[in-house]
Image (tube, rainbow, N blue to C red):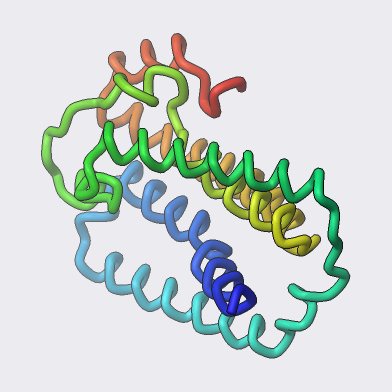
Length: 189
């Protein structure tokens, strides 16, 4: 049962940073308003996810090989999962569920820049949350693949944050630049 949950998690999370990066790039370059561009991105995203699903199902045994058991690492994994859950909670509290799913990016609304709550301490808390989920599950369940996945997610979401910042500077201007100067990207960096 846990293997199915992990497969679904991996399936959903691996292509995500690149789709988010592409959307922020298109918003930044002001192409997102073009209907055909949205259609092409949708087709491209579905194609990538289907290709990834095929590759994952063909090679799923790689994810579950070399399982390890270590009580200390299990405990550490549980702590990391709790931190990821707290980041999720405080992010949802600051943004609301509607905004978490990109409603402000997909509309041309004049929404406010969120700089309170968890966003007082990090500009991109969700982009650190996802690698924490993978690392926590990897340590808790003993799957090295998920630990490597957390490194991949950290790198890819760092690139995503870079693309998102271009779009946010374009949208909020000096207000975002001031926020960026006073708030770290990922709590410590």
